[in-house]
Length: 257
Image 1 (cartoon, rainbow, N blue to C red):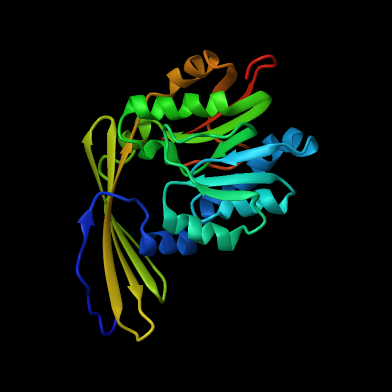
Image 2 (tube, helix red, strand yellow; image 1 turned 90 degrees about the vertical axis):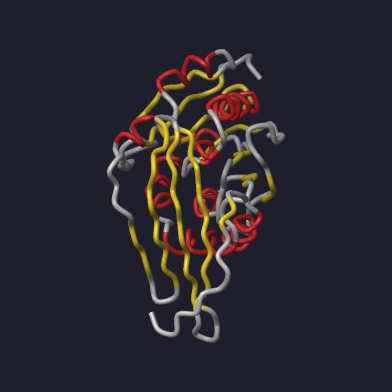
């Protein structure tokens, strides 16, 4: 990189996905939405037929939202990151609403489907918070509603114990990620982002993301207490998930809601 001039380095744990990382994630990490989109749309076919409302948790920059809107779904897209929501409004302007929702206890509107990809529930601070977000999503579902959320299992950390730092780059951005597992239930990404300014110089920002890993095998029994019959799957459809990422897929029983 030429003319590398760094600005002040910020080392604050929150909020996750400030402006620069949100943009790099949008530009360089859309592959998960591309993989999950077809499987999610198949799961949501009954919801589309009855013109139900899809609640998307952790919509990020709206990459999956766009798949949903383009397919004709009515979508309420939510995220905790204002920077991500700004991008989502540009990416999926046809969504019925795009709003801030901070899990686990942010109010979730009644819906006919709840979807979430990119494991946003795993960003919560501890296992009780993760489980509360999952059950709050179940409670938001109307009878017959579809539940489709991905989440990091304990295996996520097991598969990355010795993961080497990774570097991804384009002409205008670079992201360097280092990995750490300080405890069996915690997985950390330390990310340094460089973005090219209009004058050709570069700016830098740092974010530390801590994920909570859980034993996903106990999730179906928990959701059953909230009227959702669900199972752990290796993916939403025919796509390949990375090791340790699990899809929780199910539906709300009739008479529950």
